[in-house]
Image 1 (cartoon, rainbow, N blue to C red):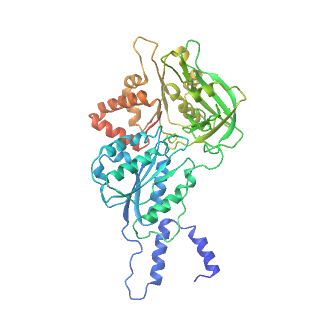
Image 2: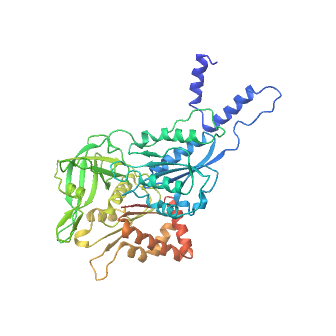
Image 3: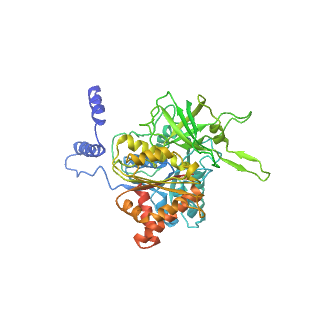
Length: 486
């Protein structure tokens, strides 16, 4: 048994060791205790393979998958996380290697956009997965009716095809950062035994922020400092620039979103889903406040009555000094690249919001990478959101190129995808030079039309549609084609 002094020395040592040093130390100790004359055996044998797949919208599932893989390696498994997007056929899941899925739920119970094809393929498949061992962890938000529906669907599809669930499905809420380590420990203990790669305990580290202001469960209260209707006379739209100041210390990055907590509008209505809006401000340029770009949503029913979006109407009616409850939701995928990389931003309508944050942030940091913006709306004279700022950024050299598409200013409607086609040659040069492409705004049809246009542009250079799709997929895998669409 160790003495108290030895225990203290051990505790001091183990916290300083890397994983490789720990493995070496384990072998060294075994060599010491090996009986003389007996051939020493390796402490670490060939590791068994564990497959870890994620389906993510904002990066949280990917982050958890990385932690699963890291912890699994320390338990003797060879694991590296991959997106389910890489799985094209159900036959690829046929193996004696256990599988762990981490999936988010997006919108009204849907899987993340990058995982739609995988979910549809699995749902329609009749391939037998008998003998395949798996587990599913879902990350969701219980304020939505279809809580963790994607995880439930994935679990059901695997079970239908005959796969064997080896650990109970996990369903975590917005405070998942505090709970996923327990699920990881449980699922790893349920796996068949593997040779331990380390004799040291492993601490799961997470970059997820904790505390007030980072969850709908712990929102902060801000106050409206400024309200501006960005549309001029003659516009059919109302788009508001809203500045909300806050006293609480709050860290966010360009690309993150703000969740607006709606008040109780009526008696008996006490559980309204928070609405998410891209943050339009830069933490460097606009300290102490967040800015939102909010379009008043409305529709007309068959009787001619006008109905408004609940949250956008609430925000549009705010006055300076009014209090607003909100929280920050990280979007670890939709992030600025390194300062020297060029970026191409495609954001019609309120899709412009995160790009205002991007450009302000790059201006404050003195980033050397070039910035190219594609923006579209209905009319230039009344719908050119943040026009004065963009002109100033062009004049000061922060915004290197801007291309505009105002659909109603000519007989034939023009949209951002038409601008992309017109600038195809230069766009290819930027991409070949390492530029990253960002798309924000309406999922359907805008983002689909933009993606189809990009594929057509790449096909002319890469030698056909199949090569173009492979190239775009690679850009996505390299975080050089990133979308935040809704």
